[in-house]
Image 1 (cartoon, rainbow, N blue to C red):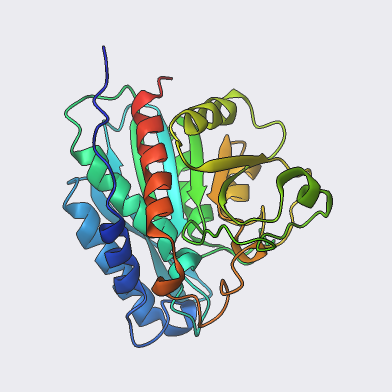
Image 2 (tube, rainbow, N blue to C red; image 1 turned 135 degrees about the horizontal axis):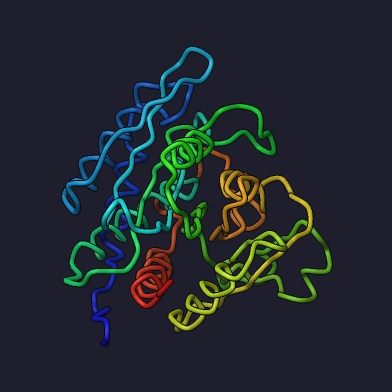
Length: 295
C-alpha cells in the first residue's frame, strides 16, 4: 500500500521557532536555568498541539533540576525510533544554529507526522534534551544519558536513534568548510553546502538503511556520510555517542557545526544567518524517510 507523504515543511515555521527560542532576555543555558525551562515550556506547548502523548522528564545534575521534553507517536508496545536534539545553548549566545535549528526541525517533524492518517508499524519518540552533553565527557549526567537510562529501565525495544545538532547554516561560498582531518578537504571540497550524516563504524544495518532513504528523499541537497574511527570534539561527539555507547544503533545529522559555522559558539549565532529553505529540505527528508521505513 502506498504511503501519502505529500506534506512539506515550511521555512517560515522553522524560522518562527528559532526566533522564539533565541528571544529570551538571557540564553537558554544552565547558567540561566529559568530561561532553559521556559524554552522547554515552549517546546512542550508546541508538541502538545500534535500529539497528546507529551510529557516532561525531570532529572537532577549537581543539585539543579533539568527536564527533557518528550513526544511520541504510536503505541508504547511498538519498537521505537528516537529523534533527539538539545535545547541548551552556550551561555551568552542566542543559539540559533546551536541548537534551536535541531529543535525547530523536530517541531516541524511533529506537525508533519500528525497530519498523516496512517498507522506505522513502529513508534516515533521525539526528545528535546534539557541539558546538553559536555564535549567528550561521558561521566556528567545530561539529557540524552538520562533518556537512555529510562528507556533501558522501561525495556523499550529501540530500533535506533537520530540526533540533530546544527542544521541551519549552509553556504555555497568557497573555502567555507573545514574538517577535523585534512584529507577530507580533497575528498569533499571546501563549500559548506552539504548535510553530514555522522556514524560510528560497526553500528549495524539500520543506519545504512536510513542513510539510503535519506539520499533517496533529498533532491537538491548534497549529503555526505562520515565514519571517523575516533571522536573529534565538535564534530562527531556529543549526545549521539551516548546511544552508540549504550549499543543502540545511532547517527547524527549535522552541518558539521563550528567546522563550517564560525558563529556556532558566539553571540553572532542568530536567526538571520540561517538557510531556512535547506533546513526545510532536511526536515522533509527525515519525514519522508520515516514514512517509508519498515522494520
